[in-house]
Structures are given as C-alpha cells and as structure tokens.
Amino acid sequence: MEATLDWSKCPAVESVPGRVSGAWTFRNSRTPVQVVFENLEDGMTIDEIIEQYPVNRDEINAVLEFAARSLDKAPSY
Image (cartoon, rainbow, N blue to C red; front, side):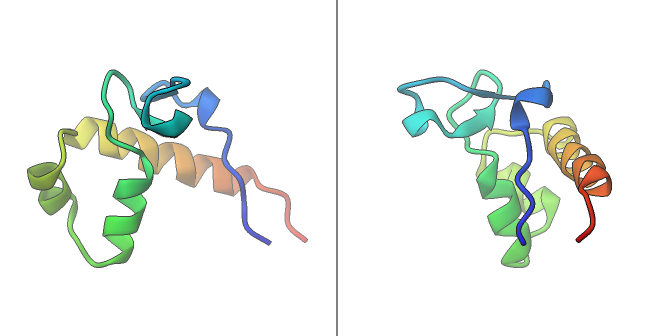
C-alpha cells in the first residue's frame, strides 16, 4: 500500500488551482515537488537538482524531512 502525504501541512509547498494543474509545487514557484523525488530516484544528487531547477537546499530538505516524518507516522498494516 502506497502512503499518501498531506502536503497541505508542509509550509515549503503549495497547490494553486490553475498553476501546474494544481500540483504541489515549491512555494512561489512552478516547480513540482515530485521532480525532487523522481530525480533522486533516477540517481541525481541534491546538488544536481539545485543546478537544474529553481529550488534551494533548504526547500529540498524541508520536503524530504516532511516526507520522512509523515512516513514515520503512517499506520503499519
């Protein structure tokens, strides 16, 4: 079962209707949060992501920490 995160509780991101189809993006940007996870999964480093997208290390760390804390609280089945 895949965990679903409640991104509305992460202050580093926002979802704005009409912007990037309402996807969760880094606050005040059009960069979807998902690009961080997809690129890390594909083997990119955080430094490489920072070079390719308009995000900074603090923003990336905030979403990674939020995801980690959220998954720690996920119920076990």
